[in-house]
Image (cartoon, rainbow, N blue to C red; front, side, top):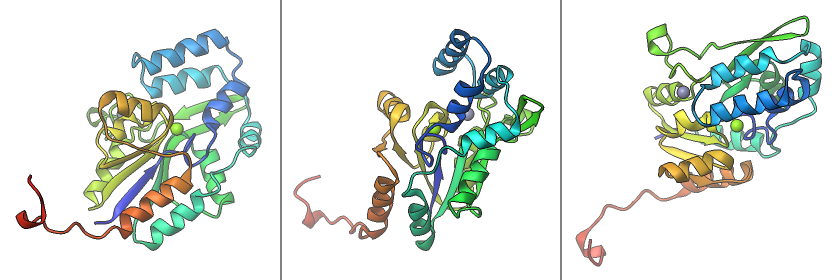
Length: 237
Ligand SMILES: [Mg+2]
Ligand SMILES: [Zn+2]
């Protein structure tokens, strides 16, 4: 069966967390208040949607400044190769992100990956105000398919890929990947996502960069189909 590789963006396809760096660079708010907000999200007291709204309210940045700042970052050098190999094998790759449309589209275009599908939050700029919106942020009761707490609940993308008849591998590094990691068929993780998986008993394959992810994907594709179990071939169970 084909696999859909759902890849987180910030801290995963892009080694740096561009969204977090934007907040740190352009927040005009009190750093202690910002740290408290982040702690509330890590502890599960607020969802990522609420966290994003609160963070953006503290920021003073124009669209041009935000775009120029984000251009200082780049994708994992092995990401485009991973995408090419996965697609050549018939798999699908999609970016699922709690970050923002403008820098994801720009980063993918600069890497020659304009046609890679992605789902993320949106940002609109009015003067020096950055205003977020959440096309994937609603729960079923509100007409969406997310958990209602995430800005872009990645679980909905796992369910959609599965409904399209593929198995689903999630590649991620952070706590915004939790909803997807809990239900994906395979989890490839680093950072706080890997720690969370270990604490929750969710099986996860560790990775450092997309060279590792590509090797893992390729090993899965070249593995021979498991032989039928025969009582005579084993030595017991
Ligand atoms: Mg991340
Ligand atoms: Zn969620």
